Length: 157
Length: 103
Image (cartoon, rainbow over all chains, first blue to last red; front, side, top):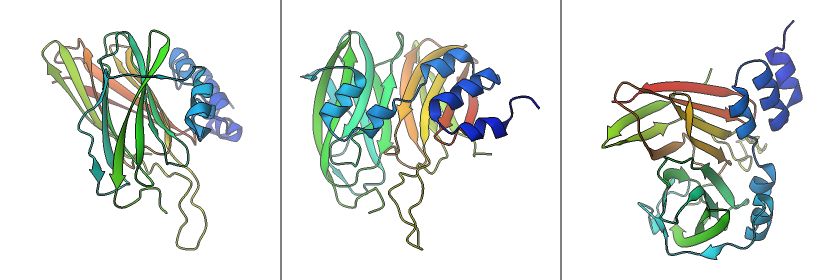
């Protein structure tokens, strides 16, 4: 039997799984390597813990990071649109953190050269909270925040 | 087999705008079902978008991304008729790849 789904499923852990998927030819190796899911960052509960998982220091406030098409008040916490645009030169990545969610980090986007440093997505917010846009640019971290009030929480509580 | 993604890739000036709606529960692991049992976390962890074999976006997601995730972004280049390929992998190791033609 070649490397089958059975073997792949037995492993369970994200990184090993991707390694096996790559070996089985289901993912190109470079894709698999690029995509090791940062468990520490997604388990972090505070800004400090998240920054530690990213290997960065405290981010600097920046006026060059904007929330676009992002509501001040979200009727439904289960689906809150968030748009972030970074005008910080050499933006490498944009992350979205939600302060009062059980884990702060909602998403992280790696922006290769040639891609606009501008992302729109939708997140779940458990309650009214500050939302942070964390930008890594030229090796340094920058941050902007926006308060979003939620009338109906989105984490199932 | 997960449901297909709805992808729109459109040429806008010298750039391509990509909008995708994925089909996924994005279960946080916080929710309890009717019987009071915690529904296990089940969510897309990584997303890769490629154009002509080159990555134009890599994303890592947590369960706080809303159910049936939406994503929109733009990259320079891309011509009508080119293909954009999107792949996601979730925490159970399930994956899905879909393609769209730039219009």
